[in-house]
Image 1 (cartoon, rainbow, N blue to C red):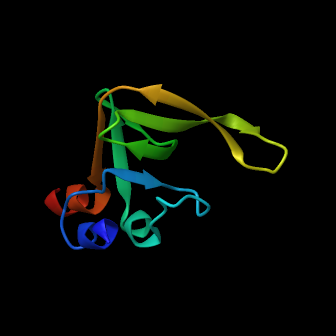
Image 2: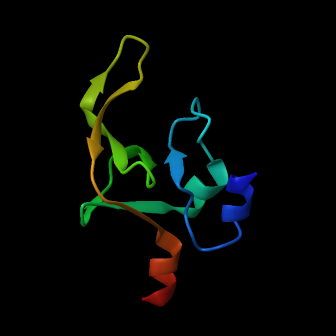
Length: 91
């Protein structure tokens, strides 16, 4: 519902996950390319983020649990998602 509306405009969703098992997973948006700045620093290992709650989940190196899923660390701070294709179009 709300996620479908976000695919047509230039604002990334409030919450997005890279894992297909999550209810916040959106393949179309991930294919478009979503970048995340956390506390002003570009992060490339973001597994999930939530702007309204102010947190990101980052992969903890190559560590995995017994089911093969990446171990993540939840950090709180300022989250700024953006679409990467918009940055490429400008430059």
